Length: 74
Image (tube, rainbow, N blue to C red):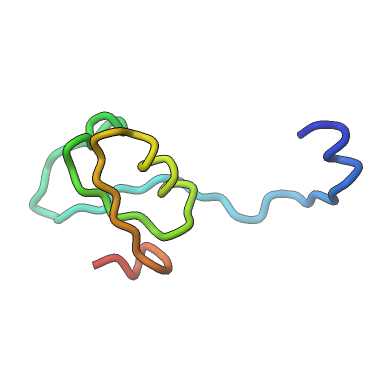
């Protein structure tokens, strides 16, 4: 955060923390330790999330977006 930005905007203490989560079927025992491990895979992300942008930045990941929270993913 730049000094100019601090003067123009009022910031609060963080009130939401978010972490990347991978949801997969219970019988799927594969482990994905990085985004590169998802190359060649189809990945569902919530529309407009930072994670959607992050997944789209990696060539080879097929990104499917879904509205709403992760609880709404099929």
